[in-house]
Image (tube, rainbow over all chains, first blue to last red):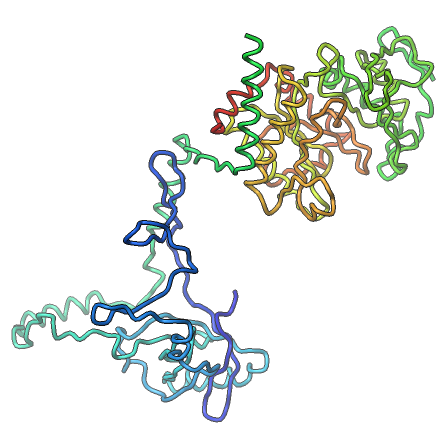
Length: 257
Length: 299
């Protein structure tokens, strides 16, 4: 595993050097887009919307539309706006985890202590576990400041990115029923149903079987049907040799007949 | 000592000399191997000029190539004079058409058998072409297998039949029958195309670069053997390398991870061929139609 980022946790006067790893992986199958006719790979091109001609990467800039006109941004503009690069996961507060609504949760990452930080890491992990609290921290990843919580889970300190309040939409536009519309007897029934279905949460019970099912279909298809080979790419060099050889063979055939 | 082989008296010398000292295999063992394998090897050497690769002192000594038949040939050994442009003279090549001649060659120190790609009926038209998959010391055998499969993929697209054999403990040969319908130049050009398209499939591990220094740690896809007078160790030939490996014809289904070419040796190949039969006979078949193959490749 390669760390995405290295830095340290700033906890009071102590710095704990850590490496940050992604905690999640994709379980989807990697499918390619093909032309139905000959199974050639589909390629994307960036084209000029007016002329339809391809535009090279080096000729592409990014802009923002204001008053029907584009303001084009340069590398320098982006740099000026970037968060100042720091290497610190700065802990601001400690809170109870249940106070954070799950709507705010984003990507989880694992934190691994650097060699020189194992003692401090262990101490911080113990303190988090004992206090049953999580640390609220800010840090800069890829030029952008992020908000996160740090919590101890099964021996590892997990950094869970959380959304800023501005990123979560207001619910005002949704048409929601008032509280008073619920009858007490019906509520009683609903509650008892919930009680009946209540168990301990076990994530291993829930499987993403889509990828596995799709793989089964693919394997069965590969076995039963003749797979269509995509057309071979022929380079200029090979193409030249090919036509040369074809030419000389057909000349010979003419001579014979 | 003299042994009687098919009504010919073959005079053998120094049969106890160790040819493969580490493997404790003597010159007599090599003669005995070819004696028992003659039936299988015969189709691949019959009527073909033989380049003699001689290791009279065994494998620890480099040995040498000799094309001209030595003086004082026994009467059962036939030769054919072929004009050599480079030397501007005729060379008398040995033609190996009976078991006595093969054993005579073994006694000269031929551990490896190197026949021409064409036979005396049409010396200018090869019966097959070969892509020699020759790894550098840094390539794994898995990479060699990948390369052989890529050669097959190109040939499959061309709808050309192909046959694979081990070269020695490290490389593989892919043979394609031509049925003596094409000149060496045409065979070389088509094999060049196949090698080029293979290299384009595996640009990171394969090279067509002749120069060793430019090739680096890549597998050499050698198509340049498909020229008049060039030779490769034929099917069932032993190789003068430690381990006494032999060139073993394979089923394509065997060319996969887990194949260990060092398992085919002077000791094991005779049993294998009795069980599997000759997997290489198609190489001498009617041959591919290069024009159709080019069309299938999109020309």
